[in-house]
Amino acid sequence: MPTLEVFLPAGHDDARKAELIARLTGATVESIGVPIESVRVLLTELPATHIGLGGRSAADGAPPSQPVIVAILIAGRTDEQKRALIAALSETIASVLDAPLQATRVMIKDIPNTDFGIGGQTARALGR
Image 1 (cartoon, one colour):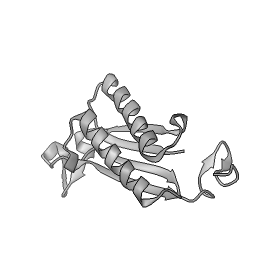
Image 2 (cartoon, rainbow, N blue to C red):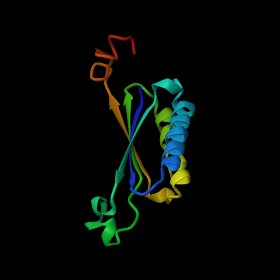
Image 3 (cartoon, rainbow, N blue to C red):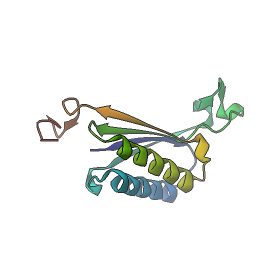
């Protein structure tokens, strides 16, 4: 159910990306109690010319503005679960990518169960 869209600077090797997928999955499972097989992680690597902060691109010396995670969830998690998820994802990605924690961003998108499709059916129709 949870889908993590992860935006990170280009250039990390495949082993590090595999570690990132595994550790973000684990952090999600531990913080909100979902089954491991329900967590999807989608990585998007961005070249420095495609990342900007304060009107400047990273290629032009903008300060770090990555990584960013958009966590898409079926609505219904508590504020405490969301707080735990944000903290766990932020700490995990900063650690794995050796990125400044202050530069990480995690945004949660709560999707109503009527607007979240799984296997061609709404989550609501599946009892979620």
